[in-house]
Length: 370
Image (cartoon, rainbow, N blue to C red; front, side):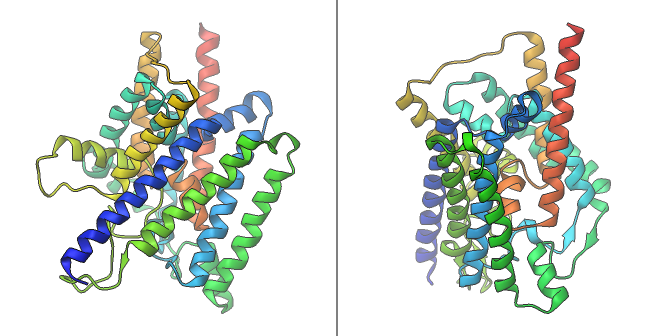
């Protein structure tokens, strides 16, 4: 492959990722998909409907991910979620912080982008604060703290942290087939669990569950199949085009917010180029905007009080720091990561949910004080 061909393919990968992100943003706005909202519904009303959306999407994504791996389209070991080092303390601590923060900020990173598209100036502030906090945790003050504390606590899994790979290695099984079987069992169980909910079987709920699951699969295909070049013409090494991590990527929104701010601020620097994460951030906002305009639900929204502003900014900081520390958000770890059946992702998502419950209890305490 010549350099000119590589550049064309890179552009195609970025346009494809952008288009898929537009679809995600449109569906999320149309169906009110929100992981924080799903946890809130359970805690406050005992309603599992929105959690079933999330469960179905994750189940479908699992089956699609390992289905592509079985076909040889993607390599499941080539993602940040399936590495051999399990940073379990970072996952749980970052998850707790992120979950707590998303309650204060009225939604996770993906919901923040969707709300920006629907006219929320509150969410625009959250985006900037979260992006700065995320960048600081990638390369700044809190990055030093992260690397020298929680990131040091880990253990190794020689076969990688994906549970199918570990099981295949332990039992001497064929990895691709093992992954497919486990994904069919676990993912199928999640899909069935979602469908048995009588109130779940409506058009919007099915659109969220099926549509967003397929979106995650599409992102893995774009990055891991379309964007994979076995031999770069200059380095002669394998490369995933458009990747921020140098590996196969799917949807995640904490670190990409930082990359987006970096690209905007240093736009004239020729070394700052568009990447997978940046275009998906833009695609999410555009998709939500299109849906909001078509529905007539676009509304400008600002902060109500000083306390409202302070809580949202504090929540944004928690999400930025927590999301980077945990290697992902409710979409990054909660959908993309879980689709790989990664142990690290399972730990991080557990932390996010516990942190969200703590956030709701904190909000109740604030209301009682008033």
